Amino acid sequence: MNLKAIVIKLIATMIIVFSIYGIFYDVSFFNLFLVGILTTTISYVVGDLFILRRYGNVVASISDFFLAFLTLSALGYLFIETAMPIVAASLFAAFFMSLVEPFLHAYMQEQDVNEKRNEYRTPIGNLQTEFAEETEAQSINRKRDPKRDNTK
Image (tube, rainbow, N blue to C red; front, side):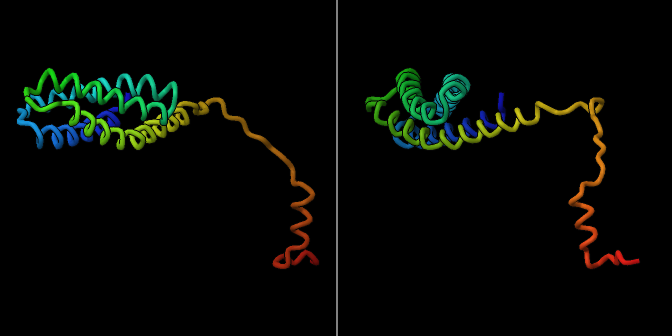
């Protein structure tokens, strides 16, 4: 689990949710916070842990748009009481969230690659030393070196 990626995703989601729903709807801070937390959690578990690892960045980014739209619409109808349609705000929020996702996915994939590189380390007790004699090319280069005086 990548805590830094979750925090980045949470901050981006909160900014988008608070901006769009806070401007167009009269919603309490707690309800917006709850929508942001639930959207981040669902999006991270389904989109980032499941889809991203199996299908890659492009498929995960596209599916994150639809996942965010469905999640925001459902949570909007549950937690936001308004006469205005919630679908338009959910579309805008999902669009802006899908703009952030490819960068977050690239970061997460880079972190996975770095972790895999660091997993394989040669244990210190299993080192070997290789001994070799000079090669002919090295001795020829020494003879041609003008800095060394080989005549003496």
